[in-house]
Image (cartoon, rainbow, N blue to C red):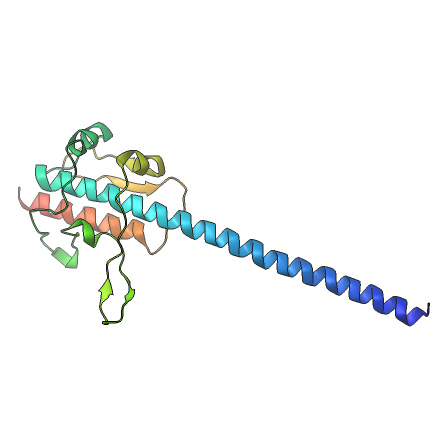
Length: 175
């Protein structure tokens, strides 16, 4: 076998190995990114659902819960789908008035109107499994909700924090 053919075969073998490795890396990366995005969507939904339970408690009691046990006792009878008192809207801060406003909207549909995302609500057990809560020691201090090291998308943590702060302003404004 001439030297040029052997060199060419080695070159093609090296190129084939690198191309195969590159294709495998692309597929592996897609699967990892897809898994992370799926986990982030789940975490976001549970963060929003837990925030809704806290908002509903605060709306009914004009105070925030100070423990997980208080929130669970409130939620045993079912969490309402709508709040009764609107936010003060100080500085443009508001919270959702209905459960359907929790989920981020899907892109515009055929009619040019954003469609709400239909997501079944999470249970408190599911929420507390992925969300860490730092409870306030006073009833007019909102709890701080953080994912337990899990990914989130779409700026959900600051959005939820803004909702709870808007409820704090409403509670403090009424006193």
